[in-house]
Amino acid sequence: MADLYILASIPNQGKTTAAILFENKLKNEGKRVACLQQNKGKNDVHRYLFKDCYHYTIPLEATQGKPAFEQWVPQGYDAYIMEITMPYSPFGAVYIDLFNNINEIISYEAKDHWKEYVHSYYQQLWKKIRSGIGPKQDLMELWEYTRNRRIQPVITKTPDILEGPCVDNEKRLHHEGMLAVETIQPKMTLPKSNKRVIAVGAFPAEYWDIFPSLHWFRFNYAEFMEELRKKKHDLAVIGACGTDALNVQEPPRGYPVICYQPSVFLELRKKIRAIPFSSTYPELVKLIKSQPPGTPLVPDGEPYSGYNNRYWVNQEYERVEPVWKTGNTVFCDGWVLPQYLIRDGFLEVN
Image (cartoon, rainbow, N blue to C red; front, side, top):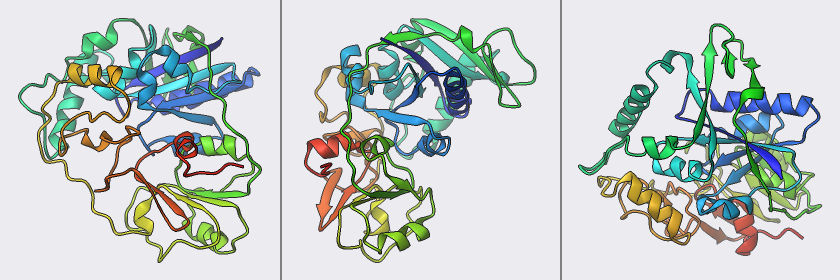
């Protein structure tokens, strides 16, 4: 059994900062620590990579019960810190539903009117979505569903040290011993390979475990491409860079390439979601929790329709499949974990 600390909140409250600070404190105590994150794509993973944290993505299918969750948590660590974004929306609530003890990250400015602050955030978020919400939605309908458990507030960006867990303006974590904790029994093991691997950009950090000799060029794509053309490696992983403006003439030949930024080689059209959301938050939660992975979650063209694929990952482009192979290059439209690629024959480890 191992300890699991859930840190949940809406964006920009300081979750990742708190997670990395706590990881460092536990590590300094001699504990082996892993950071977990729901599958929300490339966002934030680079911050963990920069800090040399062990980092793993928990896919959406792992929310179908605690045993399913534990199958995706790697063995061998004393403590796990999991970051969950958007706990009051369906894609956060399905993770929260697995646990009874949650740490909610709340900025100092929002602590006295937190529910109103969350409601305002969701209203502003939906205004930015072209299709918008339909008449059936109550954006706070999952408020009680999410909070029906022990909630430990963690106040961030504080001018002073508070009595409970907090992160001050100097980015120092205090009273971490008061954080709410769960216990889990991790079950996942990853294969190991001695292949020579180079990587760049943001990519699932599980590649580090599978390929211990992996050399990461961070976000220096020019230096990476120069090394790539030397053809001295067994595998190259081209991670996401957050822009479609970066282009390369064609994939290099000679050895396998896994590409999480298809636009560097291909001209692709972005998916358009122009139809209002026709379901409700509780209905979508029930669907995710009860149906097999790959079940369409909403009609095409609606918000969340990017997840209508066999891996339940968010696709950005107009592709039927989230993974396809052209020549020696495997393209991933979405945060497809290497475990899936190995399972489906797109990635050879031995």
